[in-house]
Length: 168
Image (cartoon, rainbow, N blue to C red):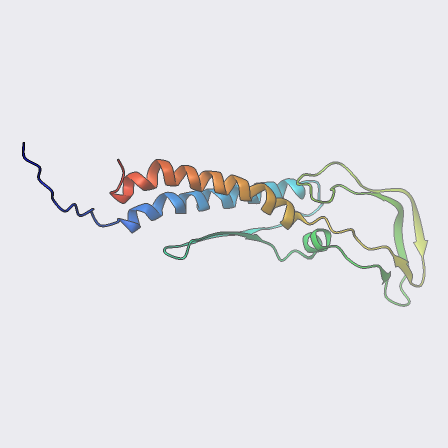
């Protein structure tokens, strides 16, 4: 019986090939997040425009999905506003007496609602209670963190290992 021992040298790691499935995961997440944000604003009178950016960095363990807007209305509802005085001095204003919110805190979605009740006309300034923050960013981060982790894990176990040159 003969025993031969040879040094095994693994093939070089194919980092570029491994990168593509992970980039695909990130690219797919952006439009899904944008769709959820549009679901929140679907009942608004004027549509909100969102900018979707995805970024993956090789070797730095970073997969980023950014969906943002500069629409003040969305930012006010998401981050909330403080109690404040309206309107400017010397301006008469018409307003509805009541309002039913279309969204809820830490919830992604929208229901019918808006202004209702008798119209009132006011002169001078008065205090309004402000907007309760809905924290859409936190709600979406919680929802998509788990989804992204699962998709990255699936891509790593199914595609990346095979593409690395080290699969069994």
